[in-house]
Structures are given as C-alpha cells and as structure tokens.
Image 1 (cartoon, rainbow, N blue to C red):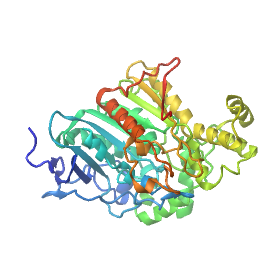
Image 2: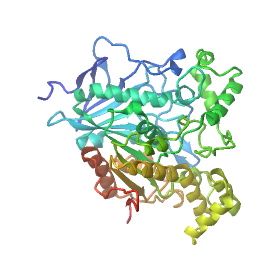
Image 3: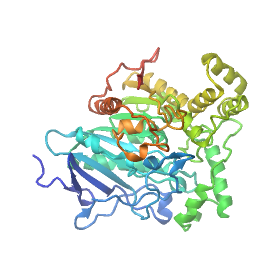
Length: 481
C-alpha cells in the first residue's frame, strides 16, 4: 500500500520531508552518519544522532571541504564538480530521487562521484537523478570525506575514510531504502573516476558483503591504489606544509580551511618509489591506500558473487591535455615522457603503441598512452580479475562517442559518458565553446540507450550484451555511429 504522504519518510535517525516532483519525490541532504568534526574527521564514521520533529530535506545541503575547482583549462567543468565547498559540518549525506510510490519495490542505484578524491559532491548538476526516478529507479548520490580528512594516510587513523563513508552509506541504505520505495536486496553501486576507484575498493572489501548486488565501474581503475610508502610521501608533504608531525591527534585542531589550502598545494608530488610507479600519473595526490590493489583481491575471489559492469572511454587522456592546449604542441619527446610515467621501458612502450596505431599522430599516441595508464589498463585488469572467478557475471564496454569540443580534440574523453548515463544532455552548461559536449547536437538516442542499459543492468543483472569471458571477452562499443 502506498504511503498517505510520499513526501514524508521515517528513517532510522528520524523523519524527513522531501519535495514532490513530476516523477516522484526528491530528498536532499539526508544524513547517513554523524558530522565529521575535530578529531572525528579522521575517525571511522559513526551513527547520526536522532533528531526530533521532521527534518526539511527539500533543498541541497553542505558539501565536503574542498578547494575551488570548476574548470580544466578552457573547459567548463562546473557541471561535474558542482558548487564546490558549501559550508556546514553535517555533510555526510545522501540525495535521494524516489519514483512514485506504486507497484513493487524498485531497484536502488547508489552513485559515488568523482573529482580526484579532493573535489565534487553528490549535488553536482550532472547527477540529478530525475531521469532514474522517471524510469522506476531509486537513485541515491553520496557525499563522502575528501582530501586530507578522507584519504590522507595517517598514524592513529583508519585508512580510506572516504570509502568507509560509502560503506556506512550502504549500511544506511540497507536499513532505509524500503521507506523510499527501494528494494534493499537489489542495490547497484556505481561511480565514475575517483568514485569508480572507490567502488572497486568496495567490491574488493569483505566489509561490503551483503550490501550490494551489482557494481558498475565507469572510468576507474582496479590498480589505482597507492602503496603505504607512496601515501607516506603525501603525508610527509602535509606535515612539512603545516609544520607539524602529521598524526590524527595533531591534525584534530587544524581548521578545515587550512587543510583545504594544503590540499590545493599538493599537486605535482612525485609518488614514484623504487618498486612502484604512480598509478594515477600525478593527476591527484590522494587515492585509496593498501598493500594490494583491489583487482588483486577480486582475482582471489573477493566480490565474486556480485555482477560487474565495467568500462572506460576511448580518449580518456584527452581531458588532461586538450583543455590545457597540450595536444596541438605534442612532440615525440612528450609521447616518450608520458610513457615513462607508467612503463619501466618507455621506448619499448612507444614502439608497441606505434605498431598498434601506425597512422596515429604524436597527439593521438600521447592521449592513448595517458588514458591507458590512468584508467583503461586498470579497468582491463579488474574486468579480467572478476571474470576469472566464474561466479558473478562480468560485462565490459568502451564509450566511443566523440564530442567536437576544443576543435574536436576532446573526443570521447574522461567524463564524457556521464551526461548520457544521467540523461542530462539538455543541461545548458554542457554546451557551447567551453562545454563538455561542444557545439554539435549530441544524439538523444544514445543517451536513451546508455541510460536504459544501466537501468537494465540494475534491474536484471545484464545490460543487454554478451558476458565478458576470460578468453576473448566481449567489449560493447557504445556510441558507434
């Protein structure tokens, strides 16, 4: 029986009132954990205190402390990063788009945003869940701790606190999804970029048992975690900048403003060690931290019962080159330098790429090497690890639709699939000379196809194409014209 008032739901922490939409109800800024303040910023998440009365959740709330970031060079990235740091301690929250409360319990899809582990939020314009609610899915976006509070490797603190937040949100969803019309037995966790790496970490973590049924990884990496030694380089840099021994206790009284300022100044750290290259190529100084990569745990059978849909974009690396004007001026030396970021023998790596792409320009090779090193190689390793277990099904894709942004140089870059997944092609800030989608009209039919495939996977466990087998696995090319 449908509730008398679908805009009011009682959660484990108290009742919330959302705002009615044409296709259901949206609930913004619903806490799933206690505010992370003081030393609690570096502790495992804890339950939120119950509130009295009905909590108003009709408007977006605060976001995690983060440096200002709304562009990559000439490209407007505000739809992706969102409004930046919106002040307020109570930011460990979810936003929920719930369909109309009729019929059986609906699939639940939980999205973890990207942003290099230092920026972004679940309230970014790209992540509006209206289209999912319209199509019968409960869509939830998660805010989690970022930067130093979320991911700095610290004595006296658990590692990967931002990922622990996501796990805590999944526990909260198990207890509360039914109140929003969702099926707690059918939860799909998905994420993009840093969010996808976190999702891969959840897949590889025994603590996730029973929390998710399916996982969807968009442009992440199963090999994107830092070793403790690499993470320690970042920790030491934070200590130098703050002039203290970096421990959870020492950082407890440092204001968020100071931690954000330090975070903004950590770009360019050399995280290479005698035994490991930087798996994220210097694009961020934060990631998951562990002795082993998530793909290694998955290959050993962790998460084997969970269905996985995983993929990357054909021109991932273009996002980090084209908006900065680096593609037009690319030389053979630049190609070799890019290969040296990820390969012990960069000359051999470049020769292999030239053999595989004999007609490619230096700019094309640089884009391919960077994209593979950052995302695609780690995606392939995670897919291979999961498909080898023989339990949960594995599906792979490559997104190939090319934007004409930045004189056609952006192509099928990193983040390009998101407007299609969320069916947000009409968002004005995505269009024009600085927009991600450029000036040409992107195909609505492609957005419909991708969006429906993601929903089909959440509903049934298959996106509508063949399973990826360990030998000669199928990869679905999405966006072929």
